[in-house]
Image (spheres, rainbow, N blue to C red):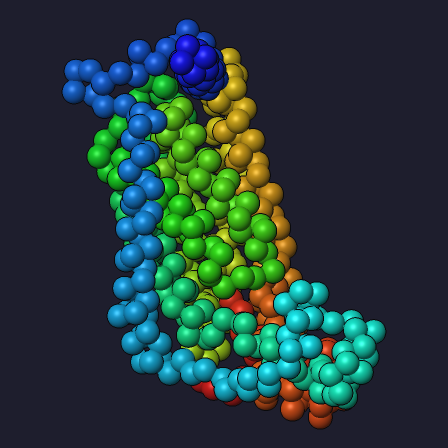
Length: 393
């Protein structure tokens, strides 16, 4: 009995030690400041770590809202915009090929095709066709893509409008030096609180649903982005970097809703509208993510704080996470510019982040063209820019 009590006491002390080290004031606050300086007093309210507990249940609320939104708003909207599914033939039951598909891979090499051909009694072309149809069965439907894009478009548009309303009347929106005026003794107002809680809850919901959402080529980068964003928003709240945080979140939302709307029109087949919105999105993305963010916002978080206090761990950590996001922005800007280049030169363009759609109609075209993979029609992804499409808006 005494041993159990002793072990329990040791565990409690270890947890307390970890807690003390984690919340050590020198990690989060500039020198000569303590958590006591950020206690609510005289009607002034300050950011507290405990405030963020609400974001997890709110994330679940977002998932519920998303379910009903996609069912009762996005689905009727898809029907209104004539979003149609392409007919996909199902792969006939074949235990040998199914076992390989589930255990060894969805894209068999030529040697595997020949081996499977002998084992299944099918020709090599029949084996390839079976795998093509089987992959198509696992691909997300056009309606699923449209509904996801509709949900994100709605949130990002509302978040951008709300975020702009939160910061547009603040003095630090026009003079970035005022972001650090009086830091960290900066009280929080209700609009800032709810802007933070809603944004963080939404990114938690994206992280929770990423396994079931449409997977694209930048799946790993998306996970890194969501995790980095959650850490950055949470840390900026802990360390009271709230003024800078609101500017950064509004800046990100300014282009995201444009991309999602381009996807929606792409899935609806409105290619000209999709292309025009994508051009606007590309311009806004480049300006906000590669110009304003590094040369205004990052300069604000890197240079101006040092005029007021010596650098501390929170300063380095916040700017490190900002650097991670900036690298992701450069990666995505590269893909966007590749698409823009192909668009300008008149080539058919697919979203560099999306996988290629394989349908039975594309199979027929592939055979007619000689069966080469390079001749497959390009997929629906995010925005597909096809200047030769005959359908008008």
